[in-house]
Length: 418
Ligand code: COA
Image (cartoon, rainbow, N blue to C red; front, side, top):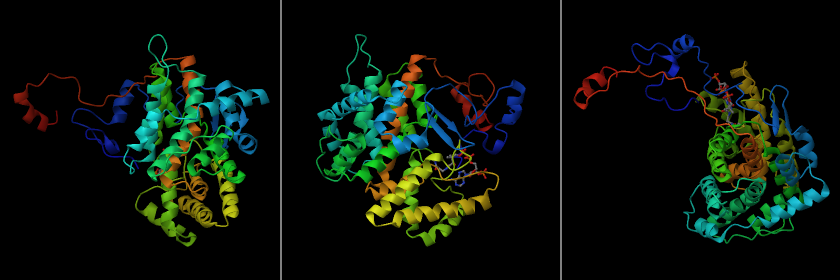
C-alpha cells in the first residue's frame, strides 16, 4: 500500500523528466541520505519509553510493560510518564484527585457536540473538541496557553469524558456526568452506560490504557513533538497527534481489524479471508509493525483479556474469530512473505476486547487516543524542556532552476515537460 501516485514523483524509480536521472543517481551525486519512512533513523532522544523491536520488549522509563500491565493502574503509569517515577501512595492519591477534578467538560463543548451531525466520525469529533479545549484554557501574561504538567493532566482527564459524551450524544442520549470516586477506567465505562462496570470490565479498559500509553517516536507522537518544537502550545501539539493517529497504518488499524472480524463472521472463514485479502494486494490490518520483528509484546495481554472477557460474558464469538485469524495470517503471510516477519500488533486483539465491552468499532481508535494522551503530553513536555526546532531536509528531484515563463509561452513548453 504505497498510497496514491503523486504526479511528477518518481514512482517505481522511473526517470522524472528528461535531464534528471533516477532519484538514486541524483542522491549519489549529492551525497544526500534519504529514507522516506525514516526507518531506522533516530531523530531525537527520549527518557520516556523504549521499543526493542528484535526481542519484543517495551519499557516505560525502564519498567517492562509486562509488569505494568499486570500490576499498575493507568493513573500510576500517567504519574510514571509525567513525573518520572512510579508514585507513592500519597502521590497517587494526589494525582487521582487532580484527574477526577478535571474530568468535566466546559458546557459549550458539550453543546457543540450536541449540534454536530450524529453521523460524524468519532475521531473527527474528538480532534475538534480537544482543539476546542484550548479555547477554555487559561493564558499567561503573553496571551499564551500554559503547557505544563497540569495542562497535561487536564487533557488526559478529559479524553474519556469526550469519548463517552459523544458516544451517548450520537445515540440520542444525554451525557452522564463523570464520577470522582471511580478510577479513570471505571469512570469511562460508567459515563458510557450510567452503570458502574464489573471489575473485569474496568480492568480490561485499564490494561488497554496502560498498554497504549506510550510507544517511542511513533507517527502521532512524532507529530506532537514536531508541532511542539515550533513552540506551539500543548493543545496544538496533541491535536496534530490525534489527526495523525486516525490513519489505518497507525491507530485506525484497530477499527479496520474490527471490520475484518465482523466481515469474517465465523472462524472457518478466516483462511479464505486472509488469502483473498492478500490476493487483492491488501494488508491484514492488525498484523505487522515497523519496529517489531516478533509478536508485539502488548498483543499477549490483550489476547488474554479478550479470552477472559469472552468467558465472563459467556460468548467467545469475537475472540474465536480473532484467534483463528491470527493463526491463518501467520501461516499465509509466512508463505507469502518469508523474508518479512509479520506478526500480530497491538491493534489485533484490541478488536475482540473492545467489542466485548460493547464499544463500537469506530470508537476503538478514540480509546487508543485516550491512552496515548499520556505519552503525547509527556513527550510534548520533554520536547519543550530542551527544545530544538525539528526541521528535516527533503531531496529536491524536480526540474533544475530555469527562466520564468511568460503566460503566452506556457502551453507549448509545459507540454514539452516543463
Ligand atoms: N499484511 C500483509 N502484508 C504486509 C503487512 C500486513 N499487515 N504488513 C507488512 N506487509 C508486507 C508489505 O506488503 C511489504 O511487502 P512487499 O515488500 O512485498 O511490498 C512488506 O511486508 C514490508 O512492508 P512495509 O510497508 O515496508 O513495512 P512497514 O515497516 O512500513 O510496515 C506497517 C509497518 C504497520 C505499516 C505494516 O505492517 C502494515 O501496514 N500493517 C497493517 C496496518 C496495521 O496494523 N497498523 C498498525 C500498526 S501498530
